[in-house]
Length: 164
Image 1: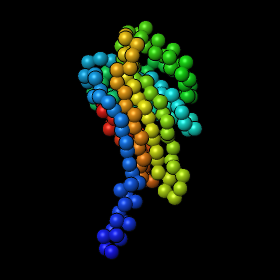
Image 2: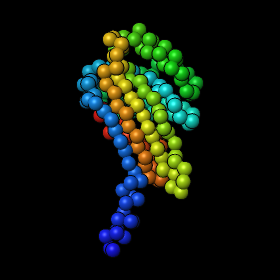
Image 3: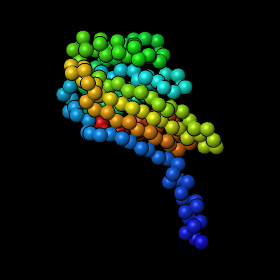
Image 4: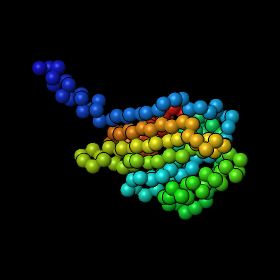
């Protein structure tokens, strides 16, 4: 009976903060060698500018880990970018001589409804080789956090676990 009571109280804590990742291979670039452009992510959520927020965190995480990041070159009002606009940005980056670009999408960026309102984030990130016009690395992940955490904190933890 005592074990059942312990499980009853412990299981919600174990299950409430979870993450899942899918990554088929290690990030292929060496830190400090190649320059990478981080483009705005496509936003498939109802949260305005989630794509900009996620790409900004990816930019910061990569910089902190020692990767050379191409300075932000797109100066626009803060808004969501369309697929066509992101493709145009890829062309501009290629013309500037940058070989690699991080592109991605935000599939979830919200506080879950309910008593606790836990943050939930889901991202897909790809490393695109502009010279060969192909994706050479990809990862996808989803994470929920505790009710006292912010979406940014959960997103940063998720991105840090994605294999950079």
